[in-house]
Structures are given as structure tokens and as C-alpha cells.
Amino acid sequence: MDNIKFTGYMENVLTFECEGAVEAGDLVNITASGKVGKASEGGAFIGKCVNQKNGIAAVQLGGYIETGKTGTVAVGYQKLVADANGGVKTASAGKERLVIFADDTTVGYIL
Image (cartoon, rainbow, N blue to C red):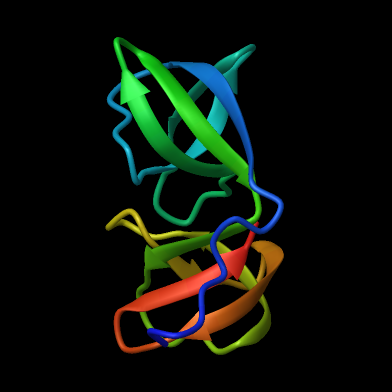
């Protein structure tokens, strides 16, 4: 896929205060008004932290992202939740997202 790129598509980034340890690359979820924390295993997520400095996280809420994955994640619409390693896995109760790229370790999808 060296010749094809999906980044930049409808990216929306907002800033939030961090609650707990949040690092760039973490999937995050709302923990309180204006605050995000790292998404828990099997939990929902609102987006991906793209930068964190001094307790403030820039969180991508829309567009294309890539994360690691646990198990098999097929292309097409899939229900995704956070896994224990900062990536995603499929689940029966997750939010449905459009997966457009998948290999052995990485999955790319629209938030």
C-alpha cells in the first residue's frame, strides 16, 4: 500500500484535558465533561489521541486512523471496541466502523 494513502480524510481534532495517563496513539473515551481517558479493554472509544502535552490531549474524532488489532478484523463495516494493547478488536456490541485496510497487525478504519 505504499502508493495509496487514506490519511487526511475528514480529520477532526479537538482538545481535551487528560484524566489519567493518556499518550499519543491511545484510543480514548470521554471520562467527564471536557476530559478523556484511555479506553478500557472491550470498551467504546471516541477517537485517537494524536498528541499530548502537559495534560492536554489532541484527539482525532473523525477521518481515517490506523491502530493495532487483536484477532481477525475483516474489511467492510465491523463493530469495533478497544483491546488491551491500545488497538481494536471486533465485538458484538461495538460501534460499527468502516474498515478499509487490514493486514496481519494493523487495521485502518473511518472513525
